[in-house]
Image (cartoon, rainbow, N blue to C red; front, side, top):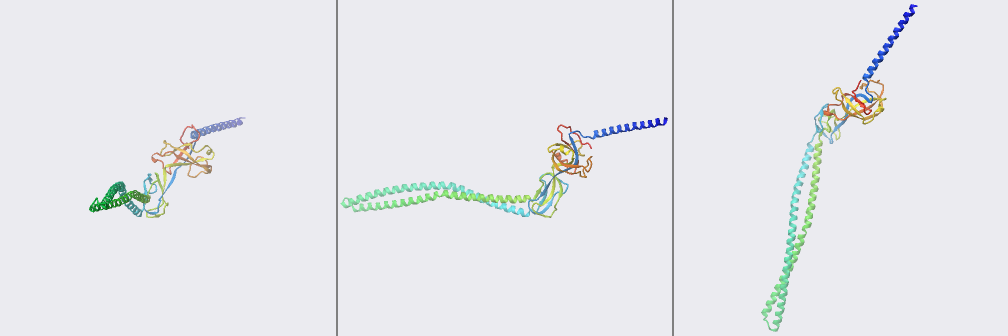
Length: 373
């Protein structure tokens, strides 16, 4: 009878030990899970910082005279990156500048001549009109004298015929008539000449308009020459290649001395103001995300300074988790690529290639928390 009691005690002790072990295991599990679980409304993920690549290329063909940067160099917007040989372009600029200078001189001379003509023509017309007036007055006087001389000659001729006047007086009266007639003829000719001079002076308006047309033509030629100079200067400026944005040189495609065609890539930059963290979200959680959701990015270099970001891109296709991304889920689980674009990169402290963790808030009002792996 004692043996069964002994066995019962052993079984009882074993049962107690199992219950205690289960309790301790459950407590440890609950503590660990509760400690590492992220609050409801947040999704955590990790990945590497990437950026939108900018290809730097020349707009014109030429021989590379020098490349001023190497891979890994940080550059600022507008910084000199490369130079193409510019000897021919400088010669074209000098030629275009000389053409502009010549036309500017011609235009200045034409303007002086036009201004002078505009002043001379009115004076010439006024003078010609005054001459016509004087000629008309002289003709009127001459015609009056001729009429008086004719009356005197006719009277003396009658008197001489009746014997009341001498032939000498009659001859003098006839000579006076001839002289008066001659003066009238001269006055008429002078009036005709004065009117021709007036007509010639009045053509000054046409000469002004012709000069104005020449002036406008010179202005058009000058604008054309200035455009040619601007084009030559633009081509010359294009031979100096500068950074379109601030960034980091990730690829140097060409080297000094190579001849490149227009549009051939020389360098590749990553814009430090357009960085994003590419993360992978599990298939079970992707339905919670949408474009425009806020996120925070944490890096080892700045663990207490999260960077604000926004969900901009959500992949439409699932894929297996890439090997370089560490997640607590199984490796074979399907995930979706999500791009979290940084709202700002103060001081350009973040650069492409840095590993980072992210927390995405999909439920409004959920408290922020650091990633818990």
